[in-house]
Length: 580
Image (cartoon, rainbow, N blue to C red; front, side, top):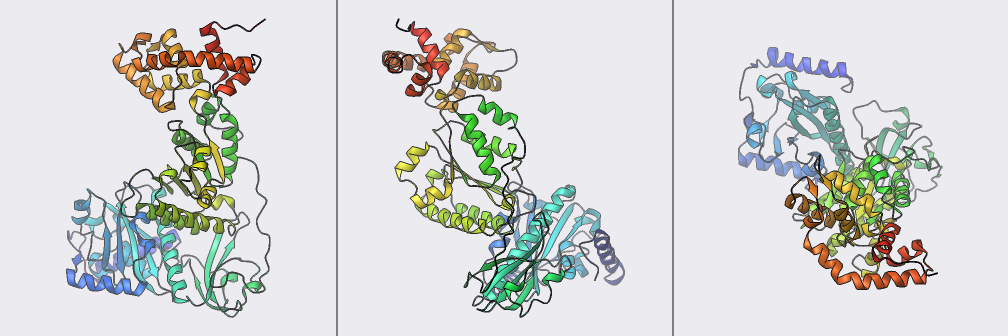
């Protein structure tokens, strides 16, 4: 059979299928409903038979892995005969797919359904995309179908997984779908192989290029001495390299040109020679200077410039990062700017707000997706998991996260290339000291997620004039302005709610003012009430701090937890003078 990884060979396979449909099967291209459906009783029997063969529910073919959020993709799971035994259709688009017979119970045998992805994947044994006019029947030409065969532990094809989308999707999107399907198929087969050889030690053998890119992978089962008793190539789309051939009865320690990853029941390979293949990690960053978004944050002062540089370095080496700080200090914006600066925004990103009700094991599904990316990284495409408000996790979810982080720690010892590791970022809605002392998170979990801690300062310790200027540029419509007295009053406020409070005040003022100029009288009354109640205490505290530091404004600012600019404004407003 022709190599299905070659574009010319794929076109040849499609032409051959279309010829068979016309001359051998006698199909008509204008048939509007060519798909036959199983009755419910027969469908149930086939589904149970498939699940029994694979050992129950397969997490690798869960729609959460393969269907992007809010997408219009339909996921079809078929058995070896081409019957769709599971179908996940996006909400609101059921009728679009059902109208063409794309759904549960359909039979996608070429003899009736014409040229299609499911049948071609079963025939060729590799990932195949049939799109638009490649379909024999015209009723399917609005769709693009990427299919991958599923194999068991003995390398027999037992079914397929298919992503069905619009025929107008770009080539980059088709490539991404094929890559994700390959990963799911590979992980599926690895699980079946390990279950079949559960009493033996298993290992993954990988050959790599000099830059760390994986070329080929084989999974093997060994006896207790480390001799290979069974092997299974995981990438059937490409020719098997010489170093992956004739592996039976060889000892793992004799495989000099392969990277070996061992998994129980024996973790230490007998007589295995450990070679140092990990290149020294460079301290260089993708770019010499931060992006404009991060640079704008750094200009706010409060030590943000040093925190940003530290965060860039550790995240570039894929160290788990915990971003702490009071509510409203801009943790989400900081993380987004950081990911954008390092080029880590990708379609493989996972995000979850731990403060929301998880429901239906949503948190566990997120961790399973992250494990998938952890075990099967996509070359040159960063996968990431961002957990917001990790301090709000339930006790049971904390246990799940702790187990996951231990898996991450173990995985990092086996991965040669830091850039292939999973990007892990967590945020907490409180300062690090408060999080550490509260006991909300167990010590083990706390230091697993907080391998690097970035404690974002509240805006009252930053240069408020720069903070206010940024928000005014974001919120003020063109042609609007703010009076000096109103601006001064905003700069004097303590802002316990940080960005969230300042933004809400500005928006309230814009709604309630004349829309052209913000004046002092437009500001909400609560700003003045706070000042009236705290003026006496503030003045006394300011005088005490200046006296204690011999009128060193910088030191006084640190004592009061304010910026130097704020202290200077207070001194001028109160008419204080340095003693002679």
